[in-house]
Image (cartoon, rainbow, N blue to C red; front, side):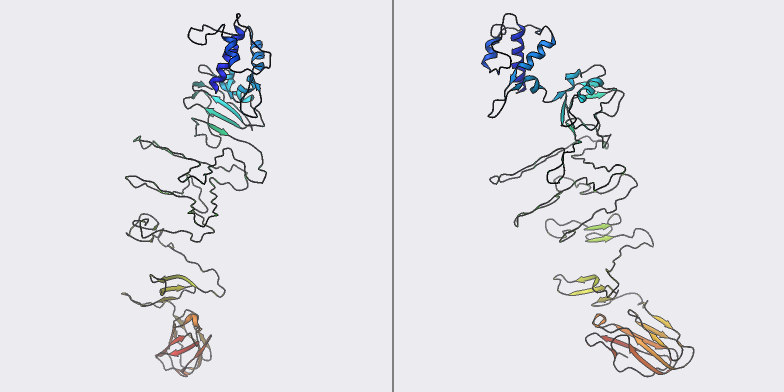
Length: 485
């Protein structure tokens, strides 16, 4: 279409500039293709021959007036005629202001920017050439589309153009859109500098992609870095609100569609190093490396089937040490905690911190409840058994020794024979069904009363000889402690 514009304009100029040819028409008249051919037939060969120049007007005023009078009509239904000057001014070029190879063209670039509207997007063409810019153009709050030819090069004393405002290390080698628009969305949504939509027709079966970016390389140098996409978000000093580098809105109104937010896959003859990497380039830290919300399953790692993870599922704290593990964690440093499981409340806590089940999830094999009680089907150990819950008591006659929940052993070591003592066993409830409580005394207790903080005691002893003791078991069904020995 641009070639047609140029040809029409050239023919028209030639017709006016050639003395032996006279224009047929009046100023402002819309010309069709036949009229310029007819006008120029006497002076410009339509086929064959040689056209010698240069051709031109006696002065630029006459040329400008003529191009203003020449009209352009798009031709489609509803189109209206406008001057060729208006048509050619749809977007600018640095060449319109003298920007070309050779010499400092800073003034031409600034003039092109100055010609841009401050209220509408402006497009400036930068043809392929070697440009020298000693002063970078400044455009304030204007929104500009720099249509830079990939073959264009820039040199000069200034080092800020063409460079991204958010990343001065990034140099555009093609189209560069910088939007500073304040046009608000009519429904309160956001404004976008660049918009792409893919609306797949219902009759089409296949893959439709709204935006494809691709990059490849073969340079063996370790410094030859290649990125397919590099978005950046930057919150400047004093900024408020929420800043998101990439937002993926995943809407689903179909019961049969498989909808995914992010899918990372590919092919190759070698294993890629990292599927998803999250880090900081300085000493600042992420508050949350990954923050999962509103999920049926927060994270799922396949350990079987065609998509199974080969080797380790999750490895925390360095290189994997054990093959074929679902979860592996290494202590970050000596005396640090490798894992902490915290219960949600200290008021009437219930439930489990950790539970082991069979393959069918129909039976519990072992568990640790929120009170720290360990329940297992069988206990096997090759080392010495340790009771870290025991208490050592030195009561006087007539006092009470209370065994707190979680205490299994109470050692009573009075200074001499006690005429009377009360021993309160831990609570016996369904929660503590099967728990053990045991006690012994180094001295004789003439009158012993054995009770429970909660529940009852069956066949409670009434005296205790020196060097003896008893063991009790809680039956949670009827909240009763029973003697074992």
